[in-house]
Image (cartoon, rainbow, N blue to C red; front, side, top):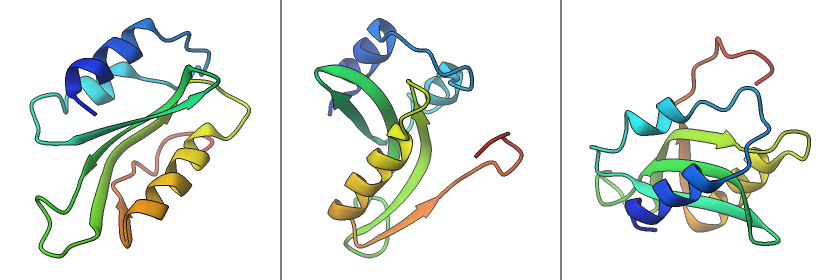
Length: 102
């Protein structure tokens, strides 16, 4: 998805996840990432920034630099990760283990 659409969807989303941090995505806007969103009934519920095979050494590999749920309580982040797993052979999560409740 184009970065411009990703930004627009995040800006217009009704976010109720107290752990969501838009700055985590904003710091990646200058990187060459692929941008992914998960929708539930046309509502944006999760988002991810991915460095994929265009930057990796092997086809089908992806590094998820950031993945966040915009809505809490329905495991939307997990759902988006499972969708990404359908697309990529191997996925590495670039996670911050200090985040609560992850």
